[in-house]
Structures are given as C-alpha cells and as structure tokens.
Image (cartoon, rainbow, N blue to C red; front, side, top):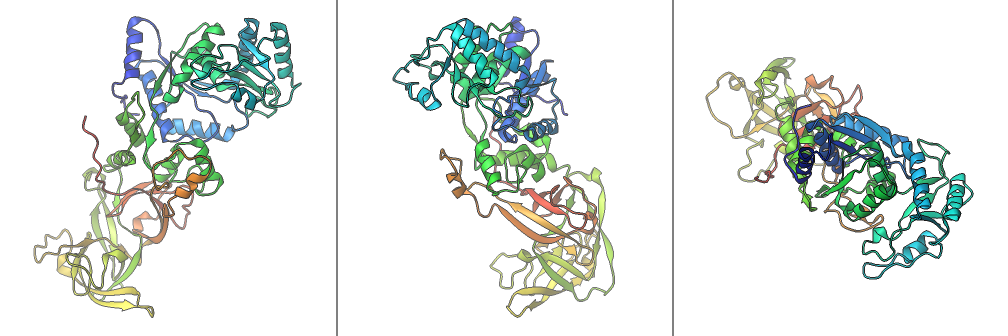
Length: 554
C-alpha cells in the first residue's frame, strides 16, 4: 500500500502532543464495528483514520467486534467486515471481540455493586424511560435503587444463572438521576437476553450494554485514543465514569469527530438492511449500495476510497459531502490504469455495402492513450458492424455531427463512413443502416483530405462478444431525511438500475471478475463478479467519464 497518511487534523495533533508530552509511549487505536451488518463508506473514513494514525506513529491498530447484542449479530457480518478491512489495504495488530471479555466485564459489574455504584432494577424498559426525566426536568429514582449490596449481588448472580425472563430485571449504574446529562441518570449496564451468541453460544444469558462494554474493552486492550463519532460526545462522561469506577489499570481517552454524510446516500445500517430484506437491492453487495462490498462490486478501488477518506479529512462538526467527490477519486485512479476499449450498449446494425464481403482486417488502437506504456491492441473490422442507436438520427437537429442520411462520420480507429440508406421494420423502427466507406481515410495513414466533425465508436458484428451492461443512478432521489420506519422506501429512484444487452470488442472474451475498462464515450466499467458467466460478461458502470465537479480549493 502507498505510504500516505491523512492530512493534519485535530486528532492527529492530539496524538502528536500526547507523544511529545510523554502521556503515551505507544499509540493504540481500534476500529470497533458491531457485526450487525456490512460496512459502508462512512466506516471507511473511520478505518482509514484509526489504521493510518497507528501506522504513522509506529503504533498498533486493533480490529474489535463490539458483539454485545446477540439479537442482531452474526458470523456472516464478522467475516464480511474482516474481508472489507483487508481489501481496503489494512492489517490489524490484534483481533478482539467484546465477548472475549464478558467474564472480566461481569467481574467489574460485581465490583460496582460492592462499591454501591450499581443495583438490580425490576422496572420495565418503558418504566425506566418514563422516569428518566427530560432535558429540563430531573429523573425519578427507581424504588429498587436502594437495595442492599448483598441483595444486588444475589440478584445479579441469579440473573447470570438464567433464573429470570428477558426484561424482568436489569443492572443499572447508580450515578445521578438529576444529572443534566441524561446519559448519567442511572444507565442500564446489563440486560437479560436468552439468545444464543455467535461467539459464546449459550454460555451467557445476560449481556453488557454498549456504553458499559466499550470503555472496558478499550481499557483492557490498552487503547490510548478511542476515536468515535460526534453522537457519542454526550456519552464521554459515562465512558470516563465506567473506566474510573471499575478501577481499570489503563485509562483510555475518547475523542469525537464528525461522521461522514454523503448526498443521496443512506448511511443507516437499519435502513440498508431494510433495502436488502425488502429486495429493493440484490444483497448487501448491490453496486447501488454504499457498502464497501457494494462499492467493490461496482468497481471502486481501495486506492480511490482511501484517497477520498484522506481528502475529506477529520472535522469537529457534521457536514454533508458531495457524492461526486468520491466519483472524482475513482476517475483519477483509473484514468492511467484502465484499458480503453469500445462497447455498444444499444446496438444498431450497419452494413458497409462497398466493403469486400468475407474480408476482415485488424486495426491498431492504443490500449490507453494517457499511458502509452500499456501498448496497443488489435481490433477486427469487416463489412458489418454495430454502432450506438444514439449515434444515428433520421431527422437531426442543427449541429448534430453524428450519423444521418447523407452525412459522413469517422469510425474510431477505422474509416469514414457515409449513410446511404435507412432500413426500417413494419413498425417504422430503424433496424439497419446501409453505408459506404472511403478506403483512403484509414486511421493512422496520415489522411489529410476532407474533414468530418463526428467520431463514433463501433464493434465488429462478426467478432463482437455479447455482453450485459448495468447502468446505475443514485438509489435515493434526495438526501436522507429524518423519517423513520420504511417511509424512506418511497424515495427509491425507480431508474436506479438500467440493464442493457449489447456487445464488446472481440478481445474482451476472457475478461475476469473485477477487470476494469474505460468504454469509449460511455465511462468506466467493472466486470461484475456475481452475474458474469463463461458465456457472457456483465459490466457494471462505475462512473461516467466526466463530471462538472471540482475539488474544493485548499
């Protein structure tokens, strides 16, 4: 992987100051996803930040699964997350699960009970919520708040043994029901869930809450800089309380940064899962999804995503990034890498009537004009070819320079052709063009005669490879709002996927999944790994060739 790091930002500056002041000897960061779904582009920002900070300062970066909710978690997601992190180009220095520390967490909860800092509560979730108070009114203490230490220890042990039903009891921290920070109003630390866990099986029926587990995990692992998004800023006092009152030997520090929001993009795992469950998409890796696996299948490269994450940087306030910035970086990455070739997505047959029947000649073309070192390729040319339907108009408007009756255009890398006759079917639809060619106008021969204003692409009809093309638009018609439930499904773009049947050049016969190409005049395409077969390649549109978007000036 290229030796690049994220530009200077406030978290990086904190790390540098901590090292200089001797507050830490070695930087330890962590990327801590919950395995309840697939990673998306927002996670990529966090992955790049945590792993590159550790790498820059010769520290350690951990991959840790915060698997404290067995109701939503699955080994499928664990393996997918590992694959995504590796694909992005990062190797973790330690692999951990919150469930690895369940015994330690239980013991720390017992310590809190013994210190009078936690109690078993019989209130239901609804009752706890109702008594929590508001931003302007203090909460009310639970009638079970003053149970004795002995009774709490007994009840908590019986909770672990499975003597109570789900929701019958919880363990709460005893902090301050009048605190202006609602997160400190006796938060729940443990709940009962008689559900098998993907990692621990049936060993446990009580599970720690995220706000209790997370700081303990950081402390146990020796994390120095616990970096999370802004929504956890109000949770930081609770984070520090847990570390302090549980008497952890190592004291990590939490820092918050702005999460990534992209235009026309859903970032909620719950909503992404709904898209999968409702079969709006064909899986978590659908190329319209903002998941890492979806971007990979569409054709994005690890380099483009890393460069995007570095460019957007790390800020203290939330903002929305234009999705076209991400597109900019894949164009930049592929323009020197991707072979150029021709593909016809909406074919219209052309017969060159004065070209010798049975003759085939091989024309020369550069593989990538912007990277001459990639060499040249051979293109077959004969009497019958396909062009794009859009490259012909029977009654063209002014300044239309492509093919129309009586007009002449250049075929890319080939000859001038002139439209002589239009063939239509019984419904009046144009199905074939009869053209003539000028053998003196062959590309590369130095022809300096008459000029034509239009150049169109084509494929040889007798050698072309049938192919499927999948074109994409944004899945969401507008930026994500605050609506809940499934109502956002009403904003799904009905034109987010268009499937076309066409042809590619003969040299595309043996393409492999994830091979990437620039199709002349169409854009960059990736060979789809899910639907491509030995008989027929399927190409996903990664991005169009050009955009009006420009990177913000520094």
